[in-house]
Length: 357
Image 1 (spheres, rainbow, N blue to C red):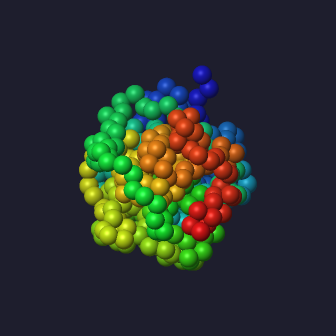
Image 2: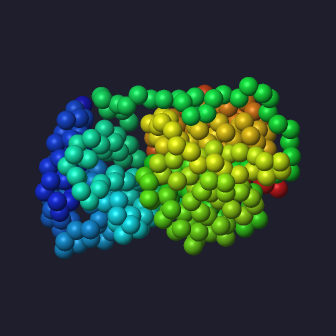
């Protein structure tokens, strides 16, 4: 079996040691180097190029952003960011995602060793997903670990509907779900939507503290108002609400108005927020007055929820394999008949606009 070759880049000797030990426990991963800074890593990479890079952001001699941009310009390579939860670190990590990084593993300022040991499953999963990613698609637009947490379904947060779907109305809701590669995909979609677009609700798998910065960045790029969702926020034309990291988001309705509720609860499909939780709530509350779109991401979160939306009469779309960074979530949705249409990323904005009309 060909192993996934990984280089770990971090100025902390403890982080390098723990990440190396964690990754090398996986039978399909080989750490070919653990480097204290990007310049040392670049020297190693000239002799043996990795399949995946795991890097910090704030490092001596060359910062992680400059390192990432250099790699993506010269030889695009799947990259996972392992960065601090501090606000400053979160802001620079968002810049790294915009530059082409695939996912984020967060680490605290204190107790880093224990945290990384406890998060070993997440690090291994992120590396496996990155190894399967098509990073060249990022420029233009996994088998789970052995000791996985129990995989809970949407029932753990939101029970199935007992009634029938509501009738058609003029109020429309667009629900988007993404994971690995989704930050770039969402930017590609949202920046092409007009300020008159129907209200949008979004789940992007992302850690706590990063979703607010992600929303803030998109808000500066889009005609739409983009914000991290808060309890009771209205879903209305010209507004996109992103579920906050570490909380589920569900759609609700009061009279003629849609709004969101931000709730706690267990991980669903090992995620919080979960796309399945959002999609089920949209199926129950909006029914045929909604459009569901599932895009790039590993795993299957959102596939069953999209199927529930389609059963409730909603229009449903899955991103085509040709543009997915990781063809996981859309693939499962397509296979179970959840997607009414399968479209490349470039055609999803026009589909959303046409649906809103």
